[in-house]
Image (tube, rainbow, N blue to C red; front, side, top):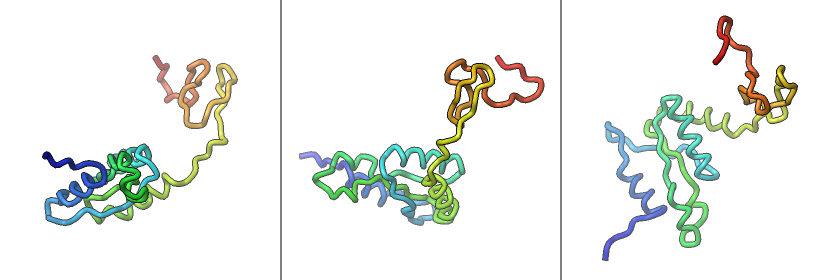
Length: 136
């Protein structure tokens, strides 16, 4: 009978096999609320040059067989010296955004969320363009 390694067991096996080139271990840095948040955070970490891995990515399928607290996605740092930089990034991620602000389009007068670069209604630019750039 073939051996099936899945869910949390796959993550634990991967954890044991992941070693840095100097033989050091990875460290657990964060437990995400869901897999989407874990992937967003991995992207932010990689953008900052921090090497990290997600564990328990497949563990949600094991709910009922394993305790739910062991099924949360975890982020593990490959280099322990990145812990402080990663912690600042995690803290910034957990801060609620300022969703109340909006930007009014000068072309059509429509309000747009502050994170938009173009108007959702008329597709006009919402940010000032660099001098000499006419767009298009």
